[in-house]
Image (cartoon, rainbow, N blue to C red; front, side, top):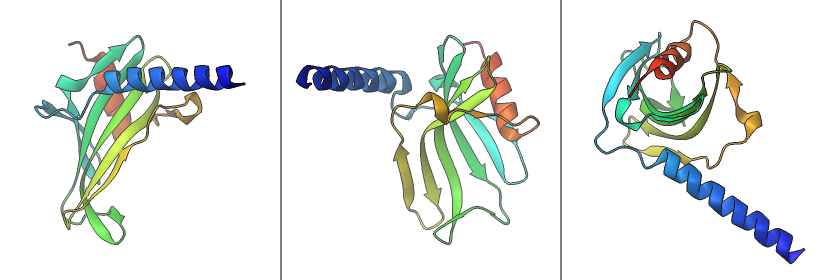
Length: 143
């Protein structure tokens, strides 16, 4: 039993290390490009942080919420912008949010890493949405 637990913990540690290597830290010298918008926000992708592994694309996305009026609130305070790490499965048309930090109007930050993703957390990207346009851009992107 102890050996199984050790192997399980070792595999988790290796998976976490690989994921962190793939994700990296949020880019300090990001290259943000506007790729979509909707009625609530403008969506930017960090071109310097796109990681491609087969059909999976990992990308930092920044959503700047429009003024006026901001529609999105957390704890009664308006959200100014959100930076999130998403993975898109280009072949399947799905995505999963891997990490997110939300920046509020009062200066607070909320969020952080979600850790390694599980296959059942992937969700279908709805057609004709901002995330559909983001996914299309990211999946066609050639570094």
